[in-house]
Image 1: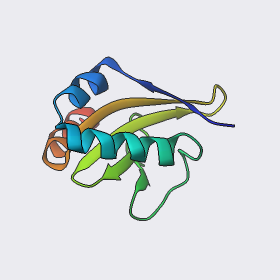
Image 2: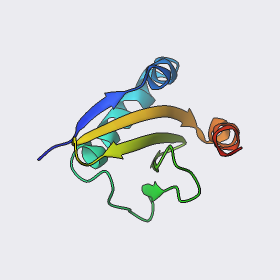
Image 3: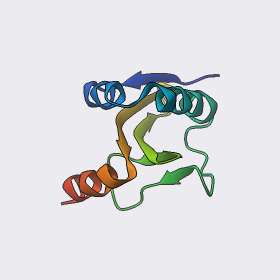
Image 4: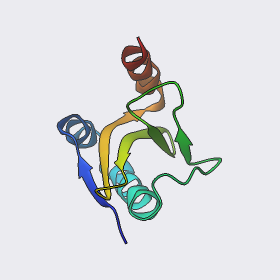
Length: 97
């Protein structure tokens, strides 16, 4: 059964600021990795963020990072942010402390 993928307002805003070429790559990766097995950790793509309650996971797509939470009972993935690698360092610092 496929997971429903929802975008938080911040993720929609982030997405709108990304060049069209990269948006397509990001959407393809979200569909491929988050629609069916969002919690399956893959060495180079999906990572469980252990020290944070939320976001719980990170999907790497080239130079971008997709941060998301998963509600397995409801079969819903909520994309919280879509950030460049550099922006991610600032974001993770803010949510961590």
